Length: 233
Image (cartoon, rainbow, N blue to C red):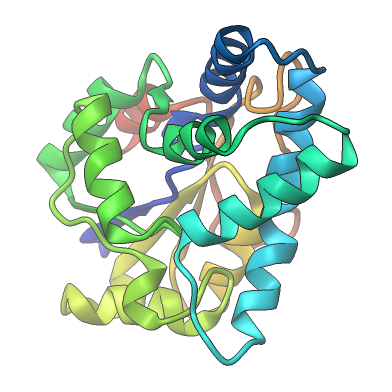
């Protein structure tokens, strides 16, 4: 990838273990508040509600940050599962998205890649959330960029283009690193090089996504350390 100067990173699932982190938070909140539930089902349904909710925001008159979206979808999911979690507990879970654990190879992999490339987030999380999250996880990138800066959400093309513009980077000089095929397909459509990172534990054992098929120039790596081995050595 001799022409690539910038690596943009998806965050939730690619760099961070959202599911394992939220399961622990939900179990703790439920225990403290005396509320029992199938927390795995609640967390999984909450995550499944994520993209449809973002689609609604993109088609609506007003942009909402991820906290607002997650607050609304959590209330719907809890109602569906008949879980009476008090408002304090619901807000704790919404804020738990700022306390997600990194995958074991994320910190060292990011540092190695940052030594060779400019690195930045390209996430649907808003900037305040991402700053808190990266401080909590002790992760470093050169720039914290968000779909918020385009007033939209991925996979809207202008999100990718706006982030490239902010780094004064032609899209053809950038790559999108993600564990989700739809993210990479959208990024490739506007000229970014697609890099798929396998995260087989994202949805629990054996629950990771597969790389997209038929995507020209696709790079596939089994984690960030393996990606650094390929791009930096």
